[in-house]
Amino acid sequence: MKIAVVGKGGSGKTTTAAVLARTLARQGKDVVALDCDTNPNLGLSLGVGDLETERLLTLRDQLDDGEIDHAPSWDQILDTFGTNAPDGVRLGVITRIENPDPG
Amino acid sequence: MKVAFLGKGGSGKSTIAGTFARLLARTGQPVLALDSDPLPGMPYALGIEVDDSPIPDDVVVEGPDGGPRWVLAPGIDPADVIENYAAVCPDGVRYLQFGNTFGHISTIQRAQFAWSETVAGVDPKWHLVGDLPGGTRQAMFGWAKYAEHVLLVVEPTVKSLHSARRLLRLSEAEFAPKAFSVVANKVQDKADIDRISDRLERPVDAVVPLSPEILTGDRGGLAPLDADPNGAFVKAVGTLVNEVVAMYPVDTKGAK
Image 1 (cartoon, chains in turn yellow, green):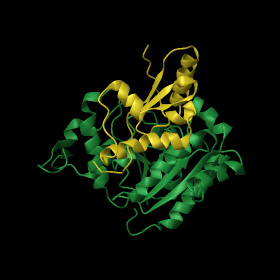
Image 2: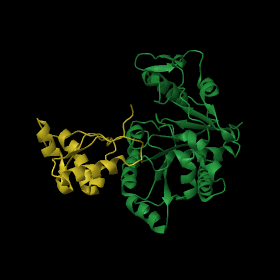
Image 3: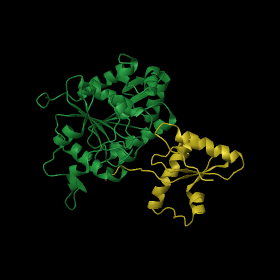
Image 4: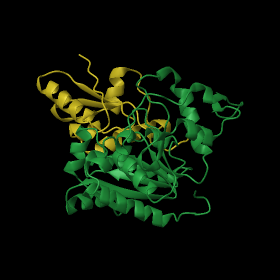
């Protein structure tokens, strides 16, 4: 199954998505949690902590600097750029905006 | 003064910004409330109906090569756009929104350019009070660059503070505002204030208390100034208005 959680800011999207992901994982399902927000906070609600949530975001800089290689496949993207969250959920972050840039 | 309210979704930007605009207007100054949120919340706080009428397409024409994609049409200046398309609100506030997405998805781009071209050329007599969508995207792309002062609305939660830390990076932007103020919202006790100042590593400049009257008003679609005009929320925003006014003394020559 593939679920997307949407709604107004502050309505509880991230919190709901995190609880859904961990509940499904506890039922024995393989769960990938994808944070598609340009201001990604899903790691905080899944319980990986703020340092790990920020670390996922700096991976892009390492890519741009040539320190790590691009992942050639979907599975490898999650392996390389994801992180393990409680209950066996695998978290991946799709988008973020780090540096202010007009345009 | 030219201010913009930023913060995570749900932190209370629109509610504070709309109240701020009306209280500022009560000092007798012309106030233009600017809303670049495609799902606007500011009308509720200003006390007007949300409508679904973007700035019309023919307000802009295609811009010159190398310039903006759309510019104001010949014969139309920012004052005309405000006169014709900025809603009249209580206390005399004018409200300019770039066209929301309840209906006009296909035309919103031209309305957005009309909005930003108007803001870029607005008469300095106007005090600008801006409200951005939640999160970092618009702010990082320069949608608040009209603001000399950013008011960062933060609630004492981990996620709201996380977003606020990211938004403080705007101070490194080429269009960085002159100053930031941290506005702590939904504050219940001293520990909430400490939580915010510790995490942001800077003092809290304004404290807005958690207010059950405002939450109840929200459920009934009442603006804070109508739901609880003399309550703690309105008082706190009034204090903030006075503090910002003191930072940016009014040029009476420019005021009507």
